[in-house]
Structures are given as C-alpha cells and as structure tokens.
Length: 219
Image (cartoon, rainbow, N blue to C red; front, side):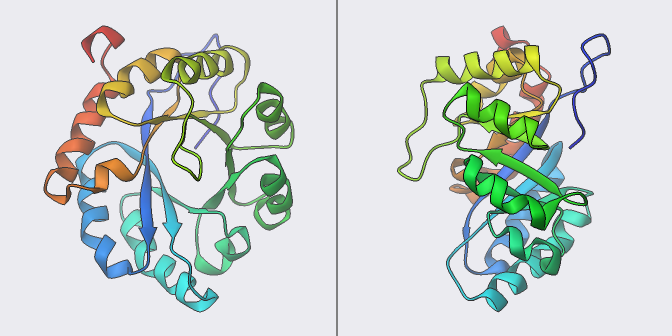
C-alpha cells in the first residue's frame, strides 16, 4: 500500500480493501475469500478474528494467508499487532491513536501499520506524523455507528488534498464507492455487508471494482 505520489504526478488508480467478518473457522472463509479476490482489484484484506486462544488465532491466519498471497494481496490483522510476525502477516490495522502508538514497536519498519477510529483531524494528523502507512475514515465503530456520509466525504477530500499517506474510505454500500473515489480515496474498504450473500459475493466485488473507475455521476 504505497503512498500517494506528490500532487504533480498522476494519482494511482484506487483499489479495494476487503474487511472480513469475525472469523472463528478458517475453512468457512477460504472459498469465499478466494472467490472475492479473484473477482476484482483487491489490494488488501483486513482479517478480523473471533476471540480465541493465541495458538488458534495464529492457525487461522496461517490457513488464510496463502489465499491472499496467491493473489499478491496484503493480509492485515485487525489489532493483534503482537501476532503479525509469528502469523506471517503483512501488517495490522489499529483503532485509535493509543492502540496505534502501542503497536508500532511490533510492526515498524518491516510491516504495514494502518489506523482507523480517528474521530478528529488532529488524531489523523498525529497518526501520520507517527508513520501510519494509511488512515481509514468512515468505518463503523464497535456499536455499528458511523459518521454521516457527507462528513466522510469531507474528511477524505481534506486528507487527499493535504497529505501523501494513503487514505482508505469505508463504503457501506456499492452506491458509496464512486463518490468516495471522487473525494480522493486511494482505497475503498468493503465490510461485513459484502459477505452476507455468498452467492453474490464475487459479483459484488466485481461491481465495486467497476465503480472504482466511474465518475461520481455514474454511481
């Protein structure tokens, strides 16, 4: 997940960032994950793990890692920065500046350290100053609440205008993909909602990929 080039250079085409549901059984996700990765332009997968003992968590990650690696897709853990190296992941996604700061010693300089849960501009700037490889805006909090879509668009546009570090924008529906790209997002995160209908999962990812290239008015 390389940084955005300076504004004088062409902006890289935006890509997808898939967020899994909470995973307790790697076997249940293997086939859906492979189908999703084959269907579209996916740069990274954020693996969210259900509560379990450390050995079980590592085994789940190691079972799913080859699925992502086969497609040259970065595999990130949601939290669990201390497990990243042992599980063979590419990095971790942390929530809030405190968790991000505490995790840096486990991740830098060799692995990706991304951060979300940034409620203020100051928090986002602090994370960037500390070396965040990306920031995420618009994801639901633990209670499932997210900012208004207008607020997410505003935050993404501000970030894209001012900072070179990549921005991941969370889309809660296909209709949000193109507007977030137009606002300046480098990656579009697709969460739990895409996994709820396994029969249409590949089609949803393919549709989202198509919308990455569309102007906002075509969404």
